[in-house]
Each structure stands twice: as structure tokens, then as C-alpha cells.
Image 1 (cartoon, rainbow, N blue to C red):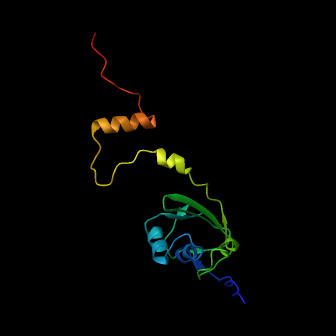
Image 2 (cartoon, rainbow, N blue to C red; image 1 turned 180 degrees about the horizontal axis):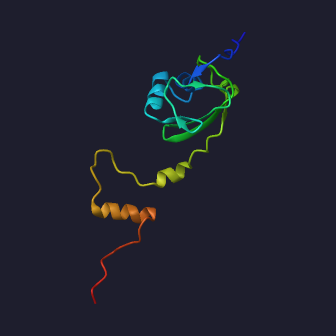
Length: 139
């Protein structure tokens, strides 16, 4: 016999709810994100203790990806991944193509600031500035 899903709570804090629906791995990580201003409810930055209600839109950045979810039902206890769909509507944009991410230039961690030449090459690669091989002559 499988356990029944948790019943709807009367109220739920934003840090508890985002952890319960598995947007964050730990509740402390959810609270830290809210304290840092990375969690918005209906477009407003909120503190971890902000109470949610059904219909609220939550926007947060998790692991570099923007997550946009609509609160369907409230809960305070963590539920299984299969049950999460009953408690939210996921409106998140699809993740970027892995090939596109692999093509983006990356610097090795700890390699210091880029030199002027490396910065120009990066800008050229990203299409931010035209290629400048040499300065125009004064002829």
C-alpha cells in the first residue's frame, strides 16, 4: 500500500514550499536563495518567511537556469518527484542546447584576467566588435 500524498497546508513559507516541490536540494539552500534576492513571487523579491497562496508565480534561478512555476496547492512536507506535478505548474523555458553551451568559450578557473588580446578574440568570437587586425594607417 503506497502512502497518500500530503494534504494541503493552510499556509506555506516560500522557502519550505520551494524545497518541498524539489526546486532546491535543501531547505537551507532555498532560504539562502530567498535571502540573497534570487526568489521572486509575483515579480517581487521576497524573504524566506513569505507566505504563499495558490496562483502565485515563483521565479528563481537554480543551477544557472531560470525556473518559473505557478503554485497549484500548498504543502510543507517534501513529496516524491512523481507527486510534485500536483502542486505546481511549470512554465520554465526549455534549457539551452548542450551543443550551444559547449561552443561558448570558457576560461580555466584560476587563470587570471584575460589579456587584451584574449579579450579582443573573445569579443570577435561573440560578435560584439569587428575584427581589428591592426590600426588604420595615417596615410
